[in-house]
Image 1 (cartoon, rainbow, N blue to C red):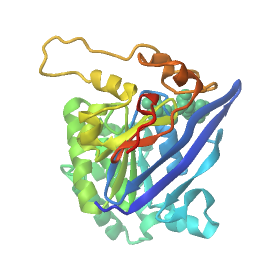
Image 2: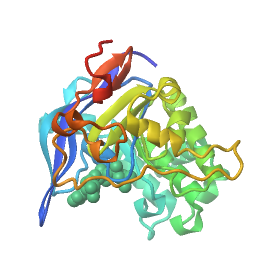
Image 3: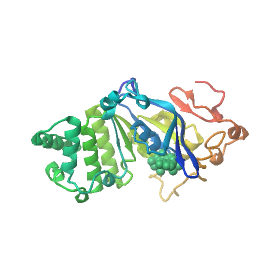
Image 4: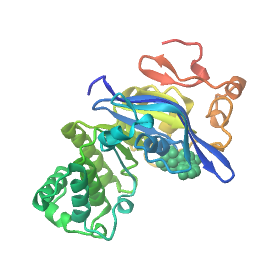
Length: 326
Ligand SMILES: Nc1ncnc2c1ncn2[C@@H]1O[C@H](COP(=O)(O)OP(=O)(O)OP(=O)(O)O)[C@@H](O)[C@H]1O
Ligand SMILES: [Mg+2]
């Protein structure tokens, strides 16, 4: 890992236009990812994590509007690329999703899908070489019997195997940044752990940087070098995984931590943070978490706390830490 940022997201603000208004899904989001770093975006459903990932991989749906911001990848602004630059950057940022079965066309065998990608991206035409390359990547993701997988239809494979196939196909185009959006959510706990281990190994082997999106703080702590906590479209806290777990500052992060089941306590009741996220068509004027925060004051309703570096390399947006400096 280096301190060289591979990605800089600055003031990213994204709306979705819907029939009855405008959903303000992401507001003023800024962060960086360094080369070789795994950064986790954590937050409840609807906090804007996927929207951020889709914006970086330039795959937002048509009703999304980027109102403001820059996404600088390896020094180039992805939102302002000249046509001729698009192809050189295209394969460098890849995204994988929660449901591997939905990603692969069920009508084609894994080998056919894989060959197509290799042919297109690596500009190979020799069938034998294409097959060799595909098998090499299927091996790299530790799939047993790559030959059999190559000749299988997606429905013949388990969820865990399919996610490995997707990761293999994704890596074959040699990306520099991998955006993994809840890639283990649909898998059982043992498979989850295996896929997380695999991603860590592949990160080292292929020199990847990873933006890992999850609603699960314990998974984030396991895989992430750094964790960014989002709530209602905004970043509320950011720190190294170790620091965030040891010393959470934002009441929302503290709440999330309390929701992690404590395996050593028998029969403990699983907690959840009371209340619901606000209507994103009408975000609060002040702090995003004000309606659910037990420590909220009048100030929190009126005035939006800025994300400040309260401790070294530990940022928080909360009036409890107002007036303090690094
Ligand atoms: N295409 C769309 N059109 C309209 N609204 C959308 C669209 N996609 C997402 N949204 C809304 O934008 C907000 C942020 O959604 P997003 O999917 O980014 O959240 P998320 O943090 O990834 O949630 P989850 O954990 O459920 O995946 C949500 O309120 C969601 O309903
Ligand atoms: Mg999502």
